[in-house]
Length: 151
Image (cartoon, rainbow, N blue to C red; front, side, top):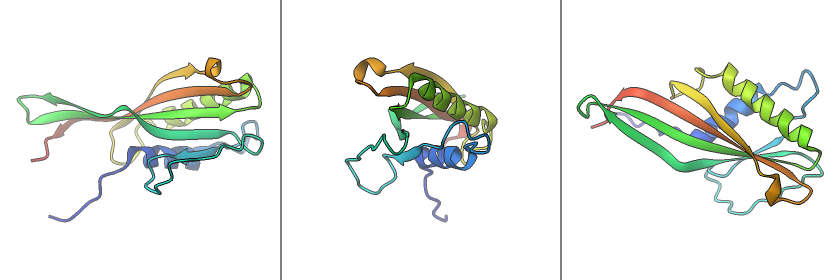
């Protein structure tokens, strides 16, 4: 049996967003994407919101969930990913960034490698936690349904 590395959900989401951001219209500048689970070992980051908006990509809670089906021969595997959007420009910019991410997810719903489907779960505005900075959290799920159990 040959080795095949396990896909890292946050890296797949970062790549999907980065390669599909619509900069042609010029309405929404591409944010800086930061994957906290990319393996670089960096535990601290500095957000320079004067230069760019930021999208911080991290595993959700739980990071992975498995549900067994059909007498334990098959399972559904779901990986959860959270995206935290940070901008100092305006609340409207926060919602524009959210809309562009949602557009990408909906347009690539079946096109992400190693998963059957990527779903846009929800969005929560977190501005009450910040002062003069607009923050929102998007929850995504990457799903494989009815896959054979690995034994």
